[in-house]
Image (cartoon, rainbow, N blue to C red; front, side, top):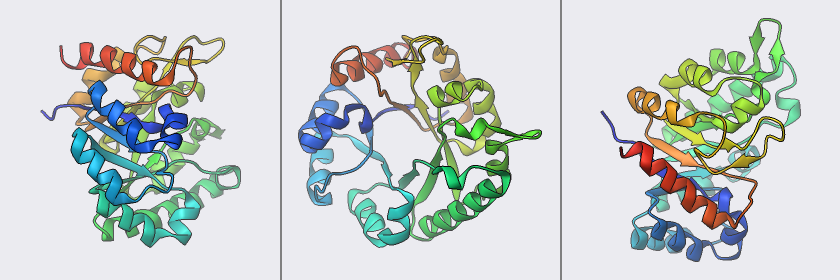
Length: 252
């Protein structure tokens, strides 16, 4: 059975990364994370990032690229990924016109298939990040149902985000089981309480994520990725707490 690797989505420490990406990578590496997802590289050349990844032992688990970037600067995006040694690209978001109806979801799936095919032909893979709006219903189907029916699994995988699934009114475990065969990465984001929906350190919230981890392991998930957007303490401190919490469960 494949071991689960523990990574950090750098959006968690976005202010620090924007000011000093290389220094932030070093701090994340010292915490003990095995890899990172990049939510932007802030103009830092790939060669410099690659050198710090090698220095810290961090794996480049993924790079986020927008629709505009994949349409207009695809070659540069692919070149950056290749130079970094990163094989996974992440598509982060569908704007409202791309998800307001069944036909919009079908068109978006066709668009994502096109991006995914281009990634595949370049030796990369594309994962679509779930953000919660996919659970709006259209008759007896959700937006996610429509996407799953039209996405080519050979070209586009799923990156499920536990917080956004819950925020969208669905159950993270049920949704994971629905798309487990297409979900090599799992974003673990916890919810402090159901009333405010403030997010919090992983495993310190109410989403019951500890029970999802062994199921993810059996399903063949490669990476558990920590992400947090709202904080009661400095973000780097929160990232360290989440990692310590996860290690107690994953390594037990």
